[in-house]
Length: 245
Image 1 (cartoon, rainbow, N blue to C red):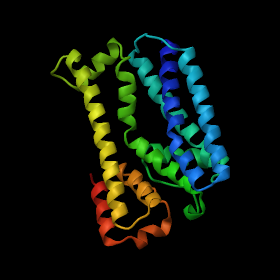
Image 2: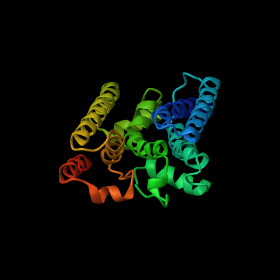
Image 3: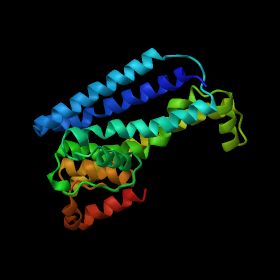
Image 4: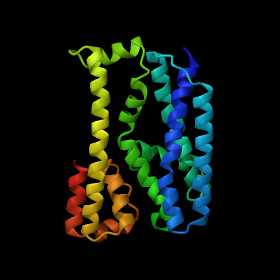
């Protein structure tokens, strides 16, 4: 087993996670959350640095074997929530590393369980990151597939062929890549549509975005606990529709 291809892909994944923190950083700036600005900026720089070092230091054109692909999946599911938990930890939202890690795992796996005692007291940018992890997790498996598909070796090709009998692998791989991109386009389009509909139903942009992120991913991290009791029938129906989508 060669570690260079593994570090190469892991580095790229960390860069993607780091860049994804741009959204909560923008909201922290908009809402003038000084502490959270420092937190998200610092974590973003850390992720981009570590990811770039791993990617550039281990860059290779070697194909991944099945074992290396499995190792990437295992490492990825451990370290992505680890870095994703840092905003909770450094912002003081969850002072325990275990609680912060649990919250991040719950988000990226779209589980929806939370250990935050008082959601309404949490900074808005942190709440957005919390919801955004679910949105990212809703397409996480597909992301991993797209990231690995061009580097799969013979073992990986056999695995995919066993899962999808019929077409030859040379035809399946391009179709899978195209399919993945198409699903991403649909995912983003439906997200935008739901945000617009929730805005028309009377929610502000922040709540619309949060509820959209969590309902699209079928996770259910609400930005405020009492919010569900105050929902109008119209946008509750809209939310239920997208939750079942």
